[in-house]
Length: 315
Image (cartoon, rainbow, N blue to C red):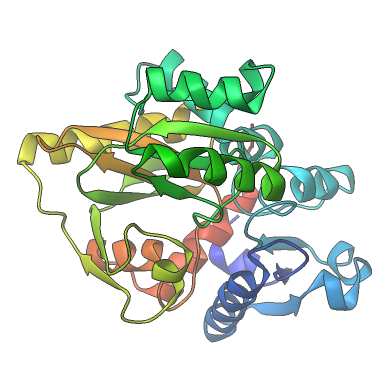
């Protein structure tokens, strides 16, 4: 189906809903909606929290602009498949795998993709035992993360032993499932993946230099809090390796159409994959549009490329 045939379809942009990333999702959705209007599509913007599901099921194609659970973890993807409604991005399995950072890391390790060492609280009978073993195996500094959240929500970097237990317990209280990851001090980089002519392509690497301790929620979505450097200031061979690893991570989880792969590099520019985001932000401050622009694709064209992913077979 070509672009003209797609323009004969009714497109529903789905955003907002009930996740912790609701406000960012609304911003992404409005930007995507405006881009599709400019491209000449028959498009409607729907926030199911406000308007319900009936309009979504009357659409021909759903453009998912939901961030976090339950819009990015396979839940909405499964719902749409139940009603045979095509949708953008990755399928049920890939979405579920990518949202679960522990399963993702196991898939990376199985696929030979370097990722920071970690311990999961799931493997211990008590929080105290988990914390004790983390000090022994991971050491400090360490990164405490919820298993299934996006936009760095709930992520903490702990540098002293006295702070580890309170941070872990607070994170468990807020998010339930938690893991601790080895802290690697280096460049924070991200790599967009988009499918062009049916083949996934790694975009130019974006180096993130946040004003905060790391690229947290505030740094992601507040103007002026993060400097974007494209291309990232990396050794040429390590730069190419990082792009190859991003593509490998995208494929290992079975992602479709597009994704954004977050990595960290060590002092020698060796890259380590942290996670894969199956529905990257599309706000005026988001990473994927910036990387696409550096590749030569403007925002509206990027949205159209993402829309075409609704027609592809999914995992």
